[in-house]
Length: 239
Image (cartoon, rainbow, N blue to C red; front, side):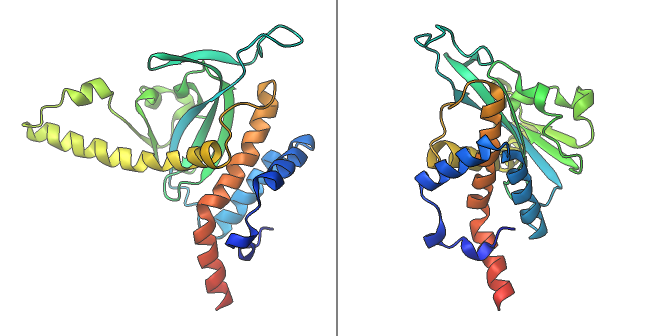
């Protein structure tokens, strides 16, 4: 079991230690178990509320070069267009606790998989509300995503057309701002794994190994996000 008292600044592992730890977990197929154990501990400490879920996905690049032994790109990775740019790789889809911002579900797919198709898988089944950006339009009509009340962002184009002089339009804008403030919590775990852990590119071939690594990364990201709360819990227990 994780001891919150060990999460002081002096005990935070360096990048080399984390890399060796992740390799050990990957080689023994233990990453999902670690992720679940971390979340079980966080739930015991009252940090996973489970009343609401935010769903989102981020693209993780994979080598697009064919200058390798097989002269091929990874067949399990695909390209997708985001904005005006094309990206080759995979997607990390996550379900995030709307209260704490902690990741409770992780799914890896090729980059060309539509976000809304994974929404149902990202629900844990206990939430009453769920949030998604405009890419999840129509999710409330999908059979596998039934259960919570969905709050999906308005399409940016339609939002820009709202007349600020209209009272109803101003109310809609406030609703969109509120939904956006809740969805913003999903950016924290993405920031941790991409910027703090520097995981911006897939490091293995195939989705299975890369998904296994995502379990360890998001598990550790949850500890980073929950560090202050865990320290407060430990302090109360020691007093």
